[in-house]
Amino acid sequence: MSKTIRIGTRDSELALWQAKTVEKQLNNLGCRTEIIAVKSQGDLVLDKPLYELGITGIFTKTLDIAMIKGEVNIAVHSMKDVPTALPQGIVQAAVLPRANVLDILVHKGSTEFLETTATIATGSLRRQAQWLNRYPQHTVVDLRGNVNTRMQKLNDNDWSGAVFAAAGLERLGFIQKNEVKSPSFGGVGKALDWMIPAPAQGAMVVVAMENDHHALEALAQLNDIETEVCTAIERQFLRTLEGGCTAPIGAIAKYDEAQDEIQFHGVLLSIDGKEKLEIQRNFPINEWKKLGFHCAKEILDNGGAALMERIKTQLKK
Image (cartoon, rainbow, N blue to C red; front, side, top):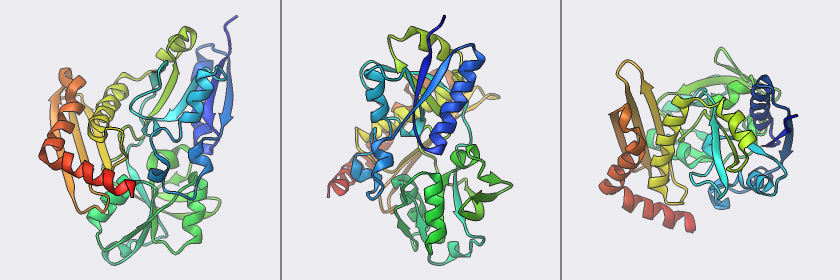
């Protein structure tokens, strides 16, 4: 009899939805499974901006330790939360087909504030920088917590709106025909098609121990090759730029089947949004393995290296 695959996950509603999605697919393959939920440091400490906590791995570290200790066999993550370098012994086992990649502005019914002054909430440096680049007259405030908590905070404050990942809201059933509904809040969603998403946004990844052949064989059947390639490009771009530092970086790679090419769009901004370095390139599909690296190097060579140094100095203060 095959052994039970213990699925590690954070205990937020969204993380559990993701874990159950993987569980169902594994069950369909005939695997026995068990979900084990844990709290991460990123979920427990909500009174500090993520960059002050040392964002790299803040949501994944607890599950990494549980896997290394043998308490769980695999872990399911939002891929954008996963550090570009995995701990020794842990490997990427499957990337599921990608959902909506966009960010979405949740507001209270009117967007007139876009032309005037406003306060927008987000816990993401990337969203903050891109918002201030487009709306320099606005103020951005920090917003932490799971989706329901952030919705409640938006409802309770006089902010004009807050920025969320559309995929998370869709997975939890909060978006119906542009209406955003939660127990605490009824508002409207506006897709931000101008905002470059986080590398790997909208993708779910499953990681496992490199010597767990039973889990790896099962998970290989869940892998979506197009999503795997596009997210690998985006994460390579991120890794080459950041060098272990949190920074406002966006990246999106898309496969154009008709042209058999990858379309890539990447951006690096200063924290206040006043500086923006951008790159857009189309590459033949057979050049994908170094695409993220070359695009990041181009940005670094054209002012990006100096900008990254300034960002690191700012974040240390």
